[in-house]
Image (cartoon, rainbow over all chains, first blue to last red):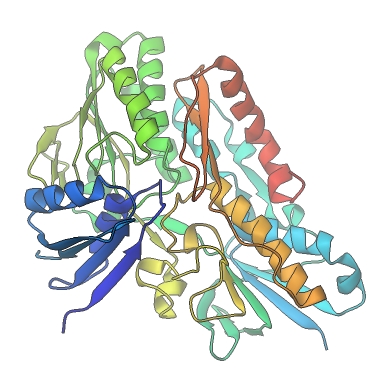
Length: 76
Length: 379
């Protein structure tokens, strides 16, 4: 059964949300989901763009006003 | 009844905490109310940031090391007997020799380690400077290097997040001083869509690289290295040829954390303000070991350690919480062999690096020695 890991990268300047996502993808199984919470508006654009490039699945992006939630499924 | 504080890990974080607690609670230690012990892996304490200078012959190896027992307050028994299991329910830590240490408060400061073996071909095909053996081999390779394609490859996660930029600019200066710069082409690769995780640092680095003719490839997450064909390929589908490959390998936390089921990859889920293990009130986590999404760096460990010292002291002597960690990080950034700058930030203040100067470079060199005062908890 697939699992979901949440990374709370709100207010994290370094290494930042995408770097945290890349690091966490190495630790989870194919099919697992990672939800990344970020106050960096660039995350909502960078993460789907990067997923498309490497072949992971962008599940959804939700704008919560003060932060974004981006969900990715490990596909390979 | 003596309250026992056990620190697992003899690196910077654990050492600052041990020494700081001794100073803050000297009366209680003398009276037998508090005891502090440390479990570590090594006779020696290494100044890890000094490894950056080894490939260029800019530091003597012996300057990197001190006896851990001499760095540590003599009131702290130090057991060189690696921890093999941490049982946070039973409040005990088992070591390689089979000894079992119980505790009232535990500090996990087991650090991080490079994992070049996790990427096919990386161990055989790449050089790195994140351990002494690797830094020595890189120094030998640089001695023999007469020019060609140099790739500086950065992988996630890694500690000391400015070191990849530092090594790149230092390589540029090194090749220049050696008189082979016109025969060298340097390409820097980075996992995300800019040259550094910190946006202001990335914005500073890009024109610097442009000025020096250093090429860069962003969104580059290493898939494999072909040591025979001398190429490195990314998950994003880019292949780069190299004559000299310098990598910042991906990192993991300590094996004991993984084996004790305390966190995937060896990173312990930790409250970002209290620095307590999630779900625990008696287990602090410090330095690289946490899963907090901030820089894995010596300064992070230092500022976290100061917070833990205050809180452990207050809890044990006044039964109250002292203060929260604000996410403070400070990093020197060597911008070549002769200049440097610095950057600091916390959870609410973004970084804003100043212009590089020779003075900051000298201060960094001075800090290479002042470090031992930090470890002793004096700075």
